[in-house]
Image 1 (cartoon, rainbow, N blue to C red):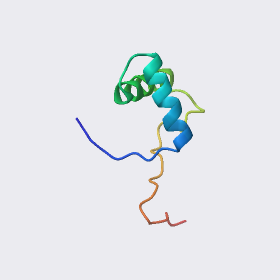
Image 2: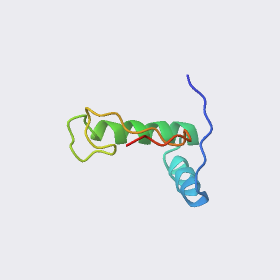
Image 3: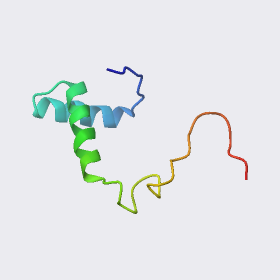
Image 4: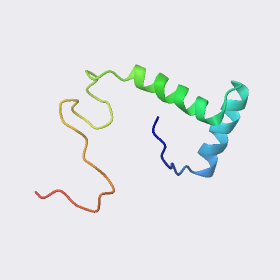
Length: 69
C-alpha cells in the first residue's frame, strides 16, 4: 500500500466527508471507491480522456522542468 499527501480544497473535502458519512465509509474508503468507479468508466480507448492520446504518456507536472520544444 502506498501512502501520500493530498491537498484538497476545503469544499471538496467537505463533499467527500459528507458522502463518506452517507455511504457509511471512512474518508479513505470513500475516496478509493470513487477513484475505482471513475477509472472504470474511462477506458484506454476513450479519445477524450484526460491526458489526451492514450498511447502518449501525460506530461509530468510539478517537476520544475519545462519540456524543450
